[in-house]
Structures are given as C-alpha cells and as structure tokens.
Amino acid sequence: IVIIRSFSDESMGDESVWKTQQFPLTFYKEGEADTCVFWDLNDYPIPIGVHPAWIYKRIKDAISDQGIVGDVSIHGYVDVSEREYWDAGFQVEVFSQSEGGKHTRHCSMLADMSIWALNHPT
Image 1 (tube, rainbow, N blue to C red):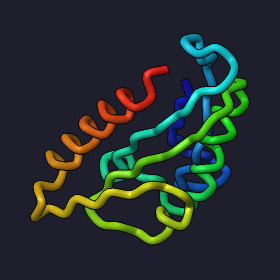
Image 2: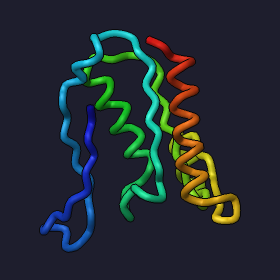
Image 3: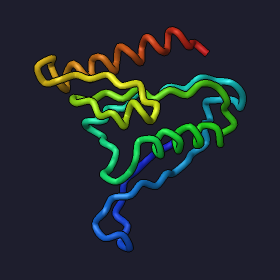
Image 4: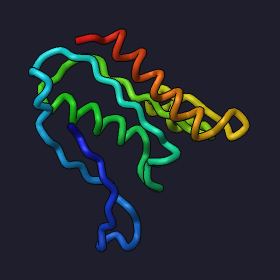
C-alpha cells in the first residue's frame, strides 16, 4: 500500500509538498499484476505546484519497487477537466455540477472499481 500524504515543509514556507510512506503489499506476491488507482481529484487534489506527471511517475515507481510488474493506470475523477492530467497519463472522467457533481462522481468511481475488479480477477 502506498500512502501519499501532504505536509508542510517549514523550509519551503507554507507550501504543501508530497512525501510517501510505503508499506509492503502483503496481499500481493511479487510478479505480474495489473494495478489501477481510482482518484477523486476534487476531494483529494494534487497540491499546487506539484505536476500530475510527477505524481503519476511516483505511483508507478512505488508499485514497481514492491516487485510488481504489469500495467498501471490512474483514473482521475473531476468536476472540471485540466489538460495537464490528460498529458500526465491519467484517464480522466469529468462530472460537472449540472451532471450531479460529487454524488455522480462517487457513483461512477464505485462502478468503475467494480467493473475493473471483474475484468482483473487475479
């Protein structure tokens, strides 16, 4: 499991920076496994000044560092699309407030997780 947390680094003033804590993926054996991250980018945004491509690479590296090889995809769910998410490699789904906003976004995430799990039973 990779936990990404935001914290304030006093040497950088009030800017938020990202650090990771890694814990062994005890439910996986080393080897091939596809991995998908489902991320609500509205409720848990990437901090200002951190590029999505950097986050994408860090997640892929953390999974690889655990000895897991396979496809890694990150699905981002937002109210307003930002080009840098697409450019970084995120698969982005946009849910405007007029389409139900947060509720619709969460329902879509749950449905996508269920479908992904059915398509990747191992």
